Length: 308
Image (cartoon, rainbow, N blue to C red; front, top):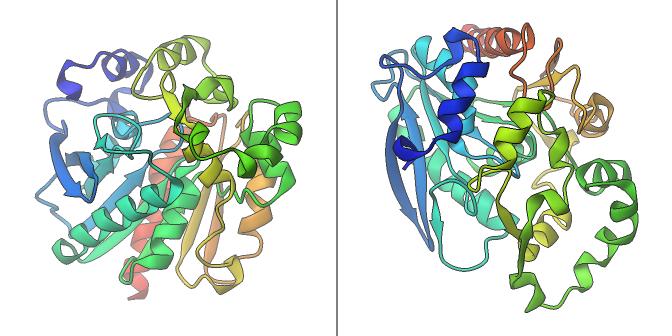
């Protein structure tokens, strides 16, 4: 459990005081069983004072506790916040080799579990969790809106090149993924050897901390999971997406620049907003971007409430 985990505790020193876990806003840790998974959840403000729930999804090399930087200030606003550890990360237990479909199914399970307990539910995804949140919202009736920091459609060559560790790997290794035999897909490799994990955050001291986290950026990943993610197709094309969507893109994202998110975002015909988080990196914890992320989310939620 995270109570005995030091990575997130050390990370607190790099965050503004408002974004740190404290006695008044510490998450409760719980589990939800689903198929072959025992999903670990961080739950903030379980009383749900204002009837709004946000389910937050991390990306590759993350975990639910690392999302405390935005979960805490949103919980202070009275929202209920749920941060699952997706299969392969954090303290979630999973029997077998998880795939990207496993992530989607787990997310759908958590969102459907929360829907009856609130007036409105929003899904929020950071990094690869952005497209995950989008896919989940396409599958679950009742989601009120989607908030993302990136929208990465791996069908685009440019997106694949930025997702991989480097362009050479993207152009030579990634096209071979569909041909990898099933038994090799069960092998695990350090996630930093196949993704540009060094660009996950712009602060070198925080980067060093995260790369040592065996339940996050310092973990190993199944080749089968990477194959399934690279081969994935969005549940719905953006032209058919009907929910309000807010893209809060970090201004100084050294991993996934704004233009590759806009390859997908610009095709969305429904209600959408784009906010640029000033001075923020891929893991958007810098000022003023970290505060702008909170304010943009609250404004987005309030606008949807006022329209309904």
